[in-house]
Image (cartoon, rainbow, N blue to C red; front, side, top):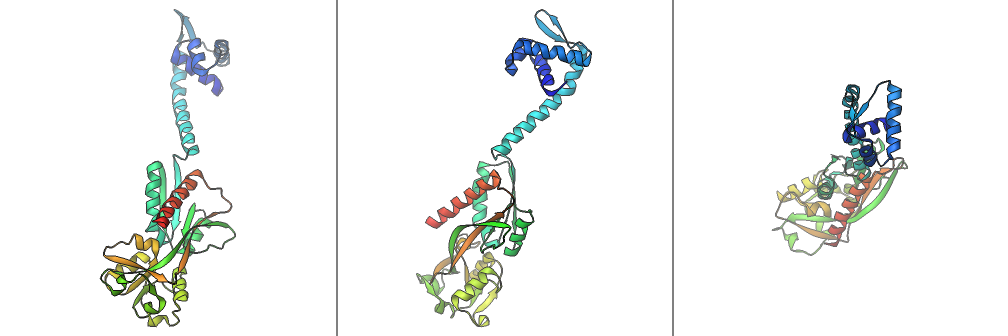
Length: 297
């Protein structure tokens, strides 16, 4: 018996008649009767006997039904999962990001996305920018988000946000009264910034003209969130990206624009060789939506 014959047999068992099975499966009654007859010939057993206008299953038919019914239940479950995958209701989303975005905008985007797709399993890994690139290349992540160009032939990158670096100080600090702060004014302060050799650290140093770093930088840290905490404790003026500043982990901090602006780009990177799934595409849409709202606020 092939799958179609088993399906027709199961429908007759459920409805008790060839007419009922034909309506259930949208087939003609002769097609149902022919299939049952063929199944009986193939198996060499009688499957149904007619009593009072109904098809009553034989003991053999009951045994066969007990064997195949769980299989159809499993197939129904598989079909439902396939529809979930098609409609991006289920699946897996693996995101890897640098700390600045992983601790600021990405949780907001994931929260919004998960409300729409609660059954999608999410994995968020936080890495340095070079490790973000490696994770996407090695297929241990579907999407990478970082503040720098990937510049890898194996990856596709998309600029999804243009931001700027800002100063973060306790609100009682003298700089908090200013509408903007210049590079020269910053050179008079103890600075908390990213290490040299990191994308943000190099950007800050080159933009502010910090030739003798030791004279200006009091603390170096790889994490902008940590820089904000250190600023709150009075260790200096933190220079961080605007996304981190808007979601600073401690209160009582004020952010001041730097003039001229120090701009950076936020990039989304995916593998050039792997098509983006609907799950990934819809999360990217949520992320861009959140960034657009931040940009316009």
